Image (cartoon, rainbow over all chains, first blue to last red; front, top):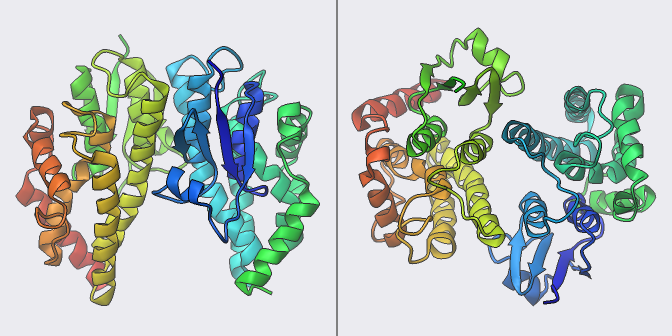
Length: 219
Length: 219
């Protein structure tokens, strides 16, 4: 029975990119459907009635929402290859903890970096670097958070890498100067086709951020 | 078998979640009460990132964040499963557990709100709970069907804790007239032995919530 898979997504969304990487890692053929977030489609509203957000995955007519839940679903539904989570329950718990940390802390802080000014901006930059340093500690000497291969935390975090240029330019700082290990890790991930094909061009992302800033009246 | 320890805080529904899960799985554990105004060395050692309860320590391995702990318990002690086996049903269960994070935030705003803000927070909490009732619970007795599962466990606070906050605030949100099915669900949940025997005494909780709100009012 052929699987019908559609991904409702928005090109610049790091959350959408997570799902693109996950599907690519599993070798799943799917239809990518770019969504207009200013004028949401009937399909999006029908498939994600609670949040009306992207990414939303549609698998054989049934929808799965929320990026990390989608990534876990993709891992469960296509079990044959490239497991994202380790097999040991304790390692799995640690993996879930750090993916949750990225969602709880990293995203909110990075939003401040491209919207805030003055003291608030400086505070956000410091918080961001502190988070990255914690993640560097968790990475340790491993090539990936998942060990020898890409895992759940790699998939959760690497999409933000194509937003780093926008953070650095808006915030006037260098992430590599403070956290070289994270940059080395990201570049290593980018050597994988599933990652390099899923991440967007950082210059394009920066242009998009400038548009958002204008729309939000930041400048 | 390695020792299981739970560092908790008696009024906190996040701690109660873990107690119920451990009890449902028949896991023996040692409970350690934390004084959150004077955190123990152990807590700071076992949860350096957030320094919060609950923390589960299995052998010498700590796990923090209640939802991460719940998944760990489910995987480590697979008897009496608390999550569906089917990948899609599992994803739906995780979606509603994750939705609870928003509900908790709305409950927090209700807890802190005063005057006009309180009215607004009550309205938002009601709207959040309406979605949960209509799309999450539907016509089921429990989120888990005929018996409770991790989703029911994650919404435990909607029973006893919300009732205490409503009483102190003098505003009711979860009532048979506004949320008939969810109200019935909360009553059914509290009748289950594992919940009934493992929740704080109502008057003790009421005194705690009152005291906590008086302290907030002074600041």
